Image 1: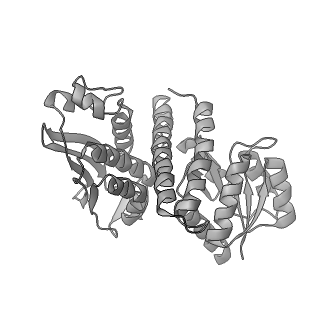
Image 2: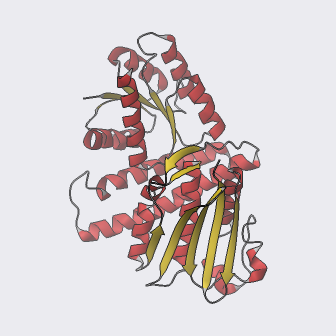
Image 3: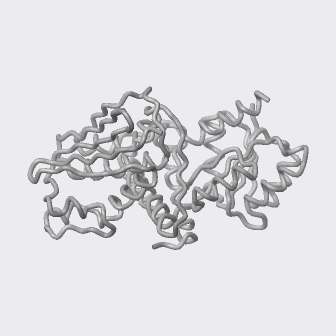
Length: 221
Length: 126
């Protein structure tokens, strides 16, 4: 895995990139035309994906060194949604939608940064898998002892024999169609580590040719 | 208008964040590019809040916090620590040392602005 210093040296300039693009996209520097916005957004999406990857690598790095500490706090679920604005915009550009069935006032107890990263990773995968015109659904439900988060999307689905392995490090499907659309395996591995670090569990239900439901539980206490 | 001292050794990042703080937050911003310069700026200007990077030349963020806490003039200034590499364990240590809050780079601007607002409200409530 990447050394801490290398990760630091990669994340610093990325911070400058995403921050500077943000100044254009939220009109802090004045209005921009539609074409300028389109290409700046493209840079922003690439930078956000890279930022997410680096944050995940950093977490995996720490987890594999045994240096894991999660910082749980109570916060309204709406704060999770605020961090996902760029993903909604990414989906829109690809003519896909993200439907959110989340009560913004629901008080969630979790490591907020980690939980945002988990949801972002699963949503990115879902948006990638969905066809144009398709919808991805994010649900959050409070159950007796847990919060249940689920991301449901139409798509090619995951064959049963891969469902158990998909959260393993460096999993890469042997199926050429799936291989073209799956990540090298770190995203799902990160999700598993991050969910389990908070005392939760993650799983997937899928039907080939129809789509998948990724879901994870986080304990309420 | 609240005064914020921003310490970071990446000039492009400092330029970007200074603009964000001034335009979005309406804050007055003082900048420094290493820990020594930053400490002197804190003593001279008595900002309402300090935002500092953990890894800086000459004096790192941890040492700056230690020095700030030694002086009556700077002890009460809330500090938000930025870091591109620190683990949650380091974050916990820095908060125990006297840091008010911690944020990992890269971050969403609204997240930082919310933390700044919270820090200033707490300071003013004292």
